Amino acid sequence: MAEPQDWGCDAAVAPDRLLDEGAGLPSVPVAPEHVDPEQPAYLQFGSGTTGGDAALRGIIVSHGNLAANVAQIRATFTRPGDVRCVTWLPPFHDMGLVGGLLTPLAHGLEIVVLEPEAFMRRPKLWLEAISAGGTTVSGGPCFAYAHCLRGVPEGSVAGLDLSHWRLAFCGAEPIRRGVLNDFARRFAGQGFAPEAFLPCYGLAEATLLVSAGALRSGTGVVPVGSPAPGCEIRLAPHPAAPEGSGEILVRGPQVSRLRWDADSAGIVPATNDLTADGWLRTGDAGRIVDGALCVEDRLKDVVILNGVNIAAAQIEALAAVHAPGAVAAFGAGIPEKLHVAVELPGRDLGGPQEAAVCAAVSGAIYSATGLVARILTVTRGSLPRTSSGKIRRAAARQTVLQQVNTPERAEAEAQ
Image 1 (tube, one colour):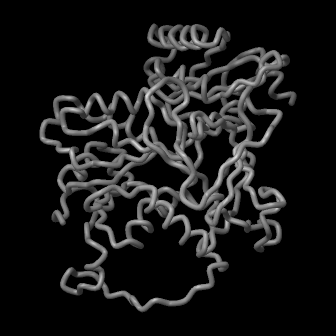
Image 2 (spheres, rainbow, N blue to C red; image 1 turned 90 degrees about the vertical axis):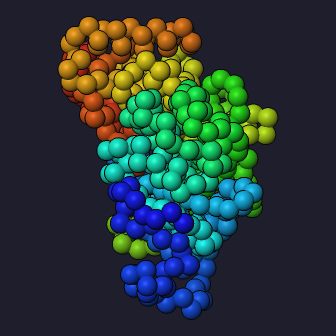
Image 3 (cartoon, one colour; image 1 turned 180 degrees about the vertical axis):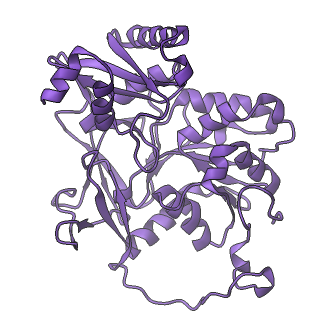
């Protein structure tokens, strides 16, 4: 394994060296210990797809849930040859803990761990670690690939070798096809192959992974593959789902069946999230296209315009092509009208760049959908986010309408 380098990490050590006192690491017990699979492994708090934006959701992941999903991830991510991993994902997030740390460790794989802050400060560190170690598996949310496009100058990539990177997973937030295509083009000269991309779908209530599959060509929503081994997916009718789609239901051994009740400070059954026969109501809208799952949006964030359900994620994808920062689409007013909040650097607010961005965003939305959107600009970083960085649309709606003097502001305050 490559020697540790200045990648923002203290050490890069193979799992089989954890007991090697010569490596300067403390010894740890290795004798297997029987654990009841029904017992809690950990408690995870998150906004979740089935809860409100402001509500913390206590999800109890059992040892059985965890063991099942770790095995599902390894089976789904298997590729011929040696497996070497790099992760910068924060371990307080399920993708970072289960996907980035526990799965490689459980299967004795080599892993380099970077500090999340180091990646955010200098995204090239991630690519350098992949290049130097001959890494085969690494990934993250879609914003990580976009961060590399913004933060890694084209003239600085000559020394990178990404030809060993056989699996670049992408999930945890809406996946932008344009971002993945641009990343593949930018780093093609360094050996990165677009076939390495593995779009994924999962949620904390299902430990982590639900489905994954190879990146397919096309337009619109990026398919996130087929269910992981032992997992089932089906769609159920839902009044808020866009036409032709339904609520995504998931069943499998990785699905958590317990919750933490904050009022009683105790563990309770997840009766509000599960059907009588054990299907998890994800709160996400999706459809099946050619055998692959396509996730469209959170049902609670669907915008209803003239009786038609519109996925906010679809509008945001159109806006993101022309926006320099994050975007959030939501409905406001009576009758409901489409609004899109766009983050801009403070220096651009009130200037010609703001007008140009607003015109480009509104034009792209109208050209693709025929919808007229009101574009509202806010300072970069001001849209509320979850702990994993996703935009909290309901909170963003309230925040933006309070900051901007619009006719909808009075209506929002009255609701």
